[in-house]
Length: 169
Ligand SMILES: Nc1ncnc2c1ncn2[C@@H]1O[C@H](COP(=O)(O)OP(=O)(O)OP(=O)(O)O)[C@@H](O)[C@H]1O
Ligand SMILES: O=C(O)C1=C[C@@H](O)[C@@H](O)[C@H](O)C1
Ligand SMILES: [Mg+2]
Image (cartoon, rainbow, N blue to C red; front, side, top):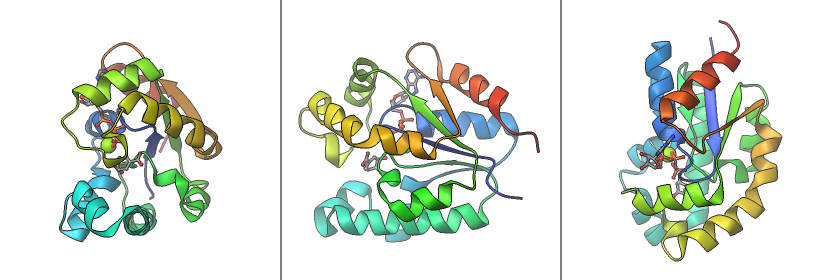
């Protein structure tokens, strides 16, 4: 057994929302690298960024992902910047990784309406998202086996698209 599906993509694209629903549909557990980092550190992500900096956060993030890819057998959603780590990208090659994509307009709306604090997107979310997508799109694509779009429609529609593409167990 190994992880059933890993979800990657830009912040706010819906990895956590879709991941939870997908796990429910498949009847398997759900985990999110952001939650695992917070549990491990005993602090919220904005506190980790403020007190220890992004570099420390990225190390914790890579560690929990490494551990989960070995020990976790459900649906795993990754933080938006997890693919920045080259070791993580290498580890992801062995797993069914799904990239969720959405337009900049949709991402900006979702981030602006979301209650989650994302330290890299606090100031001028649209410009920050644009910069992150320029820096990251090639990295997301390099790890993804399949890409699904999430511009319109409810999260369950994205779940159904992923289910059709999942390798049979
Ligand atoms: N298909 C969708 N349609 C409309 N809103 C959505 C959809 N998917 C997610 N959302 C909303 O967008 C916001 C961001 O979603 P979510 O937290 O799941 O993104 P994420 O990809 O996990 O972000 P992060 O990289 O920061 O962890 C939430 O408020 C969520 O309710
Ligand atoms: O895109 C990013 O770099 C981030 C996304 C979130 O999921 C968190 O992992 C954190 O806020 C950083
Ligand atoms: Mg998330």
